[in-house]
Image (tube, rainbow, N blue to C red):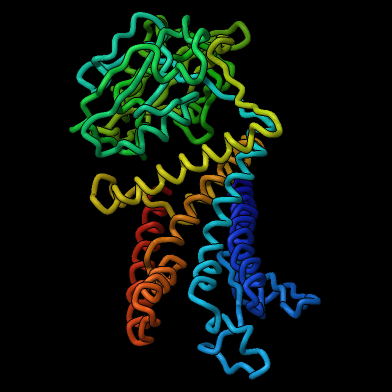
Length: 461
C-alpha cells in the first residue's frame, strides 16, 4: 500500500508539472497573439480550487489530474460579443493559430531542457559502459575483449554511461547493423570527448536477426555484451520478501556455504543450479552469526526469454566496490549545463521519433507501449532513487508528451497543425465536415492506442 501511495503521489506530481508546462505554452503564446483566454485548467472535472485573475482569466485546479486545457474565446464554440471578436482565436491569422497550437509541445521540450539542466547542475552518479566479455553466437561476439573495454560510441555518437548506451541501442532496433567503438579502459583516460568516437577499435555488428523482449532483458545483454561487474561475494545483500528463500527462512546478511551439500564456489554456478530446479526442493546452507543453518527452498517457476521455465528464489549477493576509474560523475557548470541538457533533449527526441517509426513499421512490438500505470511506477521508482533521477524521468516523459501531441491525429495538437498547414497551402480553412470526420477518426485511433497501453500495463502487473 505504501508503494502504491508513493507511486500515485509521484505520478500526480510529475503529470501535474508536465501538464502545467504544456498548457502554459498555449496560454502564454495565445495572450501574446491577442487572444482572450477564458479559463486555464489543470485537471478535468469538478474544480477543487479556482480564482479569477486581474487579466479576466479563470484559473482552475480540477479533481481529475489526467490532463488540462486552455479555453480561448472562439466563435466556433460559442457566441462572442462584437466588442470582443478581435480577441477570438478563430479571427487570428493562420500563422498565429499555428504558433498558439505548437507552443504546447514546444513548452514540453523546453521543460525537458530545464529539468536536465538542473539534473546536470546537481550531478548524476553514473558508471562508465565497461564490458568484460561477449557471448558466443550473438551480434557482439566479434568484439575482441582481452581486458576491460570501454564502449566509446554507438552509431557514431559518443556515449558516456550505460543509460546513453541503452538509448543508443534502442534507437537502432530493426536496423541491419550497428557501429560500436571500444577502447581499453586503461587507455581511455588519454582521450578527450572529441577523440573518443574516433579512437579505439570500431566494429560493425550484424543485427539483422537481433530481437529481444524488453520486459525480460535489456538491449545490452541481448546484443551479447557482458557488462563488467565487481567481484561478487557470497554474502546475501537482498532477499525478496515474497520470494522462496524468504519463505524458507533465509535472511539478508546470510553467507552462502553450500547448495545441495556441495560447497559454494561461484555465484554463476549457484544461479545455474537454482534456475534448473523450478518447483524442485534444494538445500541451501548458510552461515549466520557463526552458526551454519540449512533450509529447504523450493524455487518458484518463471518463464525466461526463450519461453522455458526456470527457478528463482529471490536473492541477490553483495558486490565489491566499483573501481574508481569506472565511476563517473556527470556534473557541469552553470553555463555548460545548458548545452549538455539541450543536446540530451535532442537525443531523446530523436530516439522517441525513431521508436514511433519502428512501431509503425513493426520493428518494435505494440507490447512495448506503456500507459499511466507504467508511468506511475516509473515516477515512483525514480523519485525513490533521488531528485536527479526524478528530473531525468520528467525530462523523458516531457519529451514523449511533446512528440505524441505532435502526431497528426486531429484530436491532438499535431492534427490541428495539419489542418492549419493545409489552410496555408490552399488559402482557405479545411471544411468543417472534413474536420469533424478527422476528429472522430483521431479519437478512435487515440482510444485504441490508450487501450493497448492500458492492457500492456495490466499484463505487466
